[in-house]
Image: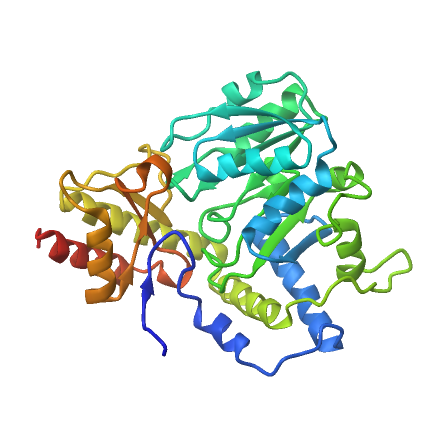
Length: 366
């Protein structure tokens, strides 16, 4: 039975119609010339959205977390020092994943709801192999200045690589990989790109490629092997690695096409306008925003649950009575914060007005 839901949480958003339609088309084989053309064009479209000319830009087969895992698996050797800025759940996850691949992890903790402090991150270690941070922290709705972090890292220690988690930022707010000097970045498809979850857009600079682990401890995420399939091996011929999820890549191709047809500046503006309308509406209801002022994401708004209000009951009523799903907080904020996403197709004024009106009715503040 299909259930009509308006997903406004931090997880999967309602896809762009073009991306959904692509999933319903007849399947292509993973070696079909037409699919390979779509794959190549998808990589080109990703380069535009990432703001990069990196040759190694591709969708990895798996959700955004696969991108995180691939980054550390291919770059970390046992004992490498990795500095991780932690200001939410996904910074925490970076610490865990890097440690599993043998990194000597130096974590730099920040209060949740606050952006990262580049100077504190820089002071954590004089010459790390890698510095990692989250651009748009999905657990808190905070944007951090990755451009400033990368500039500071490269000015102090040019050999240090910079890794950015852009799962919730790509195609929602500006991301400029080459201009910022980011060496590795990964994202997800289910946020602002407006495609169902299942792929991880990934990009890697040439200098990161030259310093990769030649034989990482994971076969599936070995970017050398994957690259031989996506871009061709030494002789230019593609070398089979795994069966690519052809329908998902066709859907990503369509979703990126929708974004680029609208134009990235217009897409960013649409997210900004919708996010501002939502934030203003929530404040008009007397609700307090959680993320630090000046660093709030337009595509993901975090708001404190009012005192005496049962978070779970409100979220249940929104789902059952209005078909609207918003997200709870995580960790120590699981019951005290709501996370409301206006991403991709949902980044529209009518969606912002709808969620404010539904919350007003449920909270008795209409």
